[in-house]
Length: 187
Image (cartoon, rainbow, N blue to C red; front, side, top):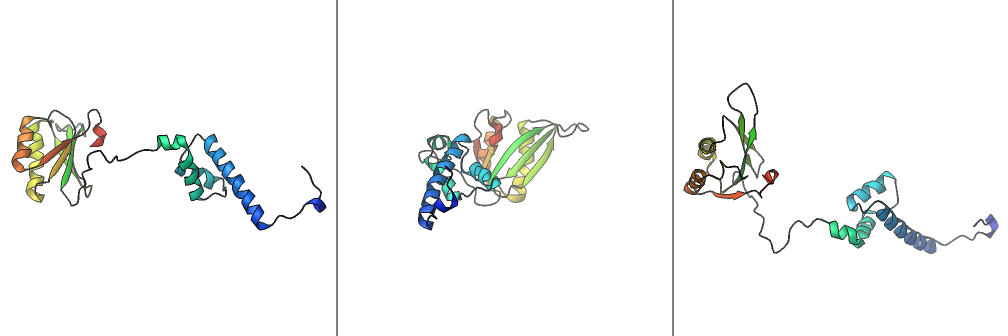
């Protein structure tokens, strides 16, 4: 409603800040709902792009009070599950996997990748096939140079699941773990 300048009474700082806080909270929750419950990070990006006067704490509070965000928030670890295996030194835990057809000019159509989980240092071996004896032949020089690791993690490829490879790992004292079925990207 329009009021002429003489009829407007200046508000004191306390009442102006209090009303502004109520309006900001309503506006922020409305923005949050209208953006389909984006979450704190995306809300912060939206607020920063438009230069809106909201702090990260306000965004976190609105997202924490939202039941939809609470339902979709990822839960990374439950206390009842088995503890995660963490590597504490170099070459303690290795991941191995085959990649297909690195080059067509030679007979070696496969690449055996061996990655140290601690340093992320990769070893790569060009292989003509994915047989178990090839895997053992590629791993043996690493074990001779750097010592045997405590664990080796691999996917469910048939050459990795063979009895010969299991006997080799048992003989040198290495524990093994497998990726979840149908999820080779975990390796």
